[in-house]
Length: 187
Image (tube, rainbow, N blue to C red; front, side, top):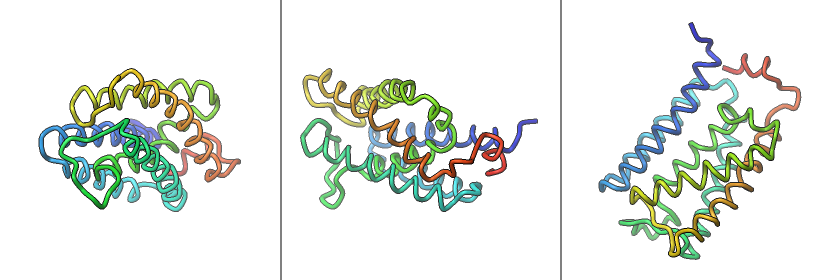
């Protein structure tokens, strides 16, 4: 039997993967709200099960809004575009906004172990983040500016810097005395 802690970590990790898949599928099959609904359902479930709701809310808002701002800037500079996106009130599609908030909730749980080595976190972020955007481009959920390799390099650098920053933000909002033993009781 798995512990509550491990079950929550699996739920947390799986939540992002399922939301990412729903966002990519929805964006490429004229169902842009599919990812929004799946992501919002995950966020609600996360806050139902989390015992650190206030901390998680702060991390979700700060890390999520920073990510949204970065993608908005990349979109304004035409490094990134989205097929079928015509909303004049949002800087990026709603599915990507929700995806940022879901990612932010992953940082203090299933990705938090990377806080111990920010160099490894930087490499993991550079690879994982940029490759997820590249896969989104390949699937047609978003488009990189040409030449693609330059846009990919922007994302590689951005994620190499952003992910360690997200971990530092999470560490700031996580009690410095909170170790793995205490974290187990948070679920």
